[in-house]
Image (cartoon, rainbow, N blue to C red; front, side):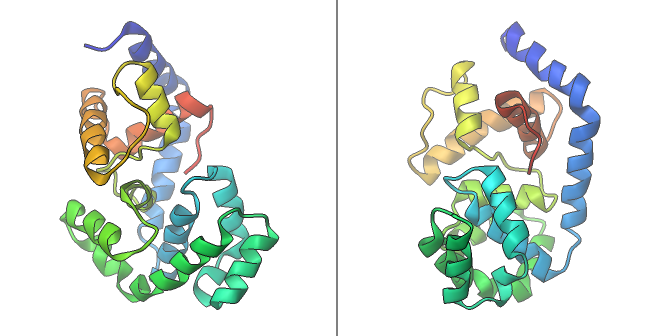
Amino acid sequence: MYSNLFVDKVNEIRNNYFNSIEERVADFKNMGKSRNRSLFIELSFCILTANTSAEMGIRTQRYINEGFIDYDLETLRSELRKIKYRFYNKRSEYIVNARFIIPDLKKLLRNRDRYYVREYLVENIKGVGYKEASHFLRNVGIFDFAILDKHIMKLLHNFGFFNDIKIKSGKDYKKYEEIFNSIAYDFGMEPGIFDLYLWKMATGKILK
């Protein structure tokens, strides 16, 4: 069903980096036990990483930290600009406007209908699409969804799983996600965890 090269690559990552990836998975599960404020800081990180590098998102998260909650709009915008974050105008607005969800984040994440939780995030928080919502949920220990960023799309396109590397709509996202999830389950992994293996394959890194 899968090319020998793809299977060998996945198994190579699994054999060499299983412990490192499991440590990251444990980090995600612990994050899911955090208070509402910490969960919102993680949500802000996922908003920031859209169309930019994970490294930039991580640096920005460390720099701003509680400011995602406490800064007024102008201060947040200024601080993002100061560290040369590219989308400082729009993303500062998205984060400030998303603060309404802070008191309810833990309660939302306890809902066992994971698809409802993701849809709620997509429909109610500007700047959060399916990729960002899936990314956030994975980072708080919910592994049901694929995080279809450009690295994953290109990798799976190159291996012949996807016929395109661009996602143009939510419908597109779900179509490609269905393929991704099927592959993940064939390898005996939840999608959000399998993503870490493929991201390591695509980028050489294990981040978040």
